[in-house]
Image 1 (cartoon, helix red, strand yellow):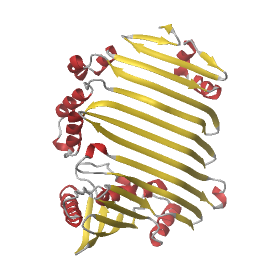
Image 2: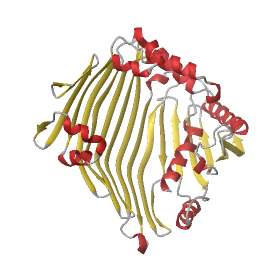
Image 3: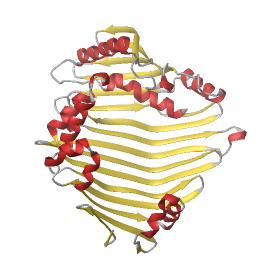
Image 4: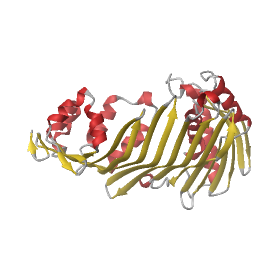
Length: 392
């Protein structure tokens, strides 16, 4: 349930935080025009509905609630009815906004969850602050910290922020960072005593970099701890890292694909999407690199799974001249695929994997040992597979 509340806060941020700002134009006009567009689209297509709008010289206020999208029956279905009071102040080149949750759907919640939601709303604890400056193109979105006991549940949240850089004149050099310092939820009731949910130091970074005619994308996720004990089922993720790079994408094709994704989905044909994706994977020198995928320890329902670490690099040979074949039959990509990956598994992780009947074939592969780790170095090129130096 808490997850739903947090998600709804990020959804409403889209009303304000995604407002494009141009340095040469007054921010107040840009903000007003964007909110007017959201209001018009909501009346036609559903989604965010804006009411009680009051516009003043240096700001405005309005209520926004999420309604059913007319062309999408399942989009945010559990959040329909979420309502925020929004207050915005702006100057010539910046704005600051505050959004406060004032209503949330409780139809599918049990009695305790309903009481908790009502307490969150009554105490005005779900509050989003956002600001943007067109002089340095930096934005910041933060959710108000909570440290309360509500409905016999101790709730602590600390340092939930979204920061980044957005320059409408250089949209292909965006940066974004989502960070959560701490979330700690502990029910205090006798029946659920000992249950908890703990998240520490989650960071998600994305970066888009344009160099001449190519675009590089980079994604990083790190987390110190995800620890929970719910219904007597203990799960833990200790020190998770994920770092992926996608390099040498054709900039023009990538930008065309972004423009296409901004259109109304009902107006986009599969042919248009296939054509652009075919061109994108034909980018000269395109490769995908998993720089680091690792975890120190995993526990799933009390089963200790240990650690793992994976690195990999994937690219396609001679793709430009064969893009049409791959577009018509994606399996054709295997003919041009080059892959090199290293997988490192702890004894506990190996034992867990081998319990799955689908992994029995793994026992037939030539393993390599380094201390207590099992290593697989896998290479695939010209349709040939090599594992730990052995051709298969």
